[in-house]
Structure formats: C-alpha cells, structure tokens
Length: 216
Length: 216
Image (cartoon, rainbow over all chains, first blue to last red; front, side, top):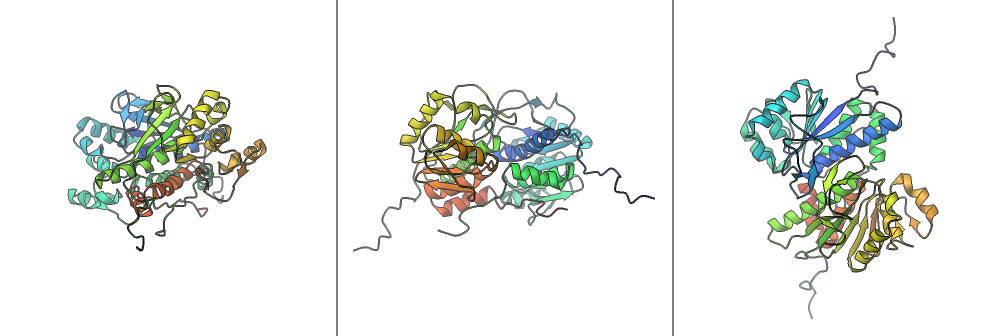
C-alpha cells in the first residue's frame, strides 16, 4: 500500500503541449497576444529549466498576413490545412468573428480540432465561434460584456456574466480582451503546475495596477 | 472675473495625438501589443464619440516582417525614415534591445523623435534604449525586475524598483511586459481625461484577476 505520492500527477511538468492560437482578419490584437505571451513565456521557462517546452503556434485559414481589428498585421505560422496536432486551441474574439459564424469550412475545422484537443478555449467573442462550431453548445460560457445579451438570445448556451473565465468540462471561455491573460495563466497551471504558472506571472511582471480607480 | 470652468483644459478631449510604437527583431510581444491595444481602443472610442481619434502606428528600422522575441511575426506600418510626426513614442523591451544599444542610427533617430514628442515612453527593458539615446540619462526609470541591477551598474540613471511605472518630466518608463498596459492606460488619461481612460479600460474589460495567488 502506498500513499500515492509517487503516482503520476495529471498536472505535473514535462508534459509537452502544443497550443494553437487562431488568427483571422479583424481578430482583436490583445485577445491573440495576451495568451500568446503567457504560453510562450511559460514554454521559455520550461526550456530554460531543461523540461520539455510547450510549442505555441498561430494558425490562420490561409497563408499571408492577417489584418487584426485595430490594424496590426501579423503573419501566421500555419494554415488550417497544415498544422501540428493541437492539445490546446485558443479562439480570440474581435469584429472578425461575425463573418466567421457563416464560414462552414472554418467551423468544421474547429469542430474537428476540438475532438482531439485536451482544452478548447476562447477569449472575448471567440466563444461565439466555439458555439457556432458546436463545441460550446449548451455549455456555460463567458464573452465580452457588450455581447452577453445578444449571445444569450442566440440560444443553446448559458452565458455566465459574473466570472472572468468559465470552465465547463474541457471548454474554457474568458470575458473580454484582457481576460485572456488571466485565463491563459490559469491554464498554464493546469497543464503544468501552479508554481510554474506563478513563475510565468513573475516573468511577465503581472502585478496589474489599473490607474484611475478614482476620478482624479 | 470667471471661475475658470470654461478655460481650456490641457487634458480635455479633441486632442489628436499620433502614437508610434517601435518594432524591432526580438521585441517582446506583449510589450508591443499591450500599449497598442490600449491606445487603439482609446482611439476607436474617440472616433465613435465623434471626437478626433488618435492615430497609432508601428515603426521599424526597415520595411518587412519583424520577428518578435517569442516568434510572432509582425509587419510594421512605417520605417524610421518615413513616418508621421509623433506626439508619443513607445519603446518596447525584449532581448532585441541588447543589439540595438550599439545601433547609432536607431539611437540618433530616437533622440531626434524625442526632441519633438510630448511623451517619451518605454516598457520593460525598452528603457535601456531611451537611456542609450540620451533621452533617459540621469532620469528616474523603471525596467524589468531581472534587469534592474545590471542597468544600475551602467550608471547615469536612477532605477526605481518599487513603482509599476515612473514619470520623470515627459519620460515615462514602465516595469516588465504587462506593466505597459497600466502605463498606457494612465497616459490615455493624460492625453485625454481619466473618464475616457476608464471607458477604454471598460472596453478592454481590464479587471485583472491573476490566478494562483494561493498555492493550490
């Protein structure tokens, strides 16, 4: 009889995870780069420690530059037709989600990726695409505060308005824009361990101090 | 005699500001995109309100894709030889700053831009470039926590270790990576007004909730 201390932990390190972040025209910049920075910083620290580092890639429908919602132009690493197997998918939000709700090829790709992924995640209005692909149907989900009412009216979804990110099974959805940073840090702690997530937070010097809590 | 309520405020809206964010190889992604998102979201809200919106642009030494520190590839809007006049310059940090400390052309450009700019800012180790260009010499500056000791040894600078961002005259420097978000929001309140900065924060849903404050 053992006390189980040596049993493999589902959240221990040395787990190699491949994380894919979807890029599309009019994706919101910080929805993409907040999680990107968290996951790549985590991977860098794992590499430096001699552990197997995670791989983080961007994936777009087509090759060539993507024009984000506020005008930043980003070159994707892969297309949806040619990318590594994903353990984690991150779907950002932004105005561009509205056009993609009718993109059956993209939604079919997303549904297929979701079958194999350990974690299916979104930031901001990215949860609309998880819903449209079927991955978030009848789930509890978060989205940008300005989209909650409209999303609720679409039906077949339970909008959570009072949590910064929401886990329902292996589907994790966050509120607007900057919430993706917090969600990604939490997921780093699930993929590896909380101590490593704290080291990642320390590297990012993420001790937020929003100004103007007072009207000065 | 008036009570001054109708006097123009130096921080009122309708001020058009052009904000330039420097891009270079191995710039840290969130150092760039944190301020980018804050300033472009602010500009969008000004536009929607019918006020003159700010302009936000990226500027690199040369045309063509820039490879950031964690591998994201970004296309700059302008080069240092051809860009609009800047009211605000933002210099990100990242490993790439080390090579640029000896880039006399870039430092001369930065010094010249700084003469005309209303605000000279940096994120993370970007303060090293402000220092090397002369703009931050003998100023109080912030930088990434891991670089404070080394920066102090370079001399002719006063490293502030206990503030998330530091203003000395019109030079504003922030601590590592994510601190650029807070600094940029503060600057939006200075360029326009605190109420507008709070509206920008609300759009970004920036109510940070870092996980793992406890070891769980």
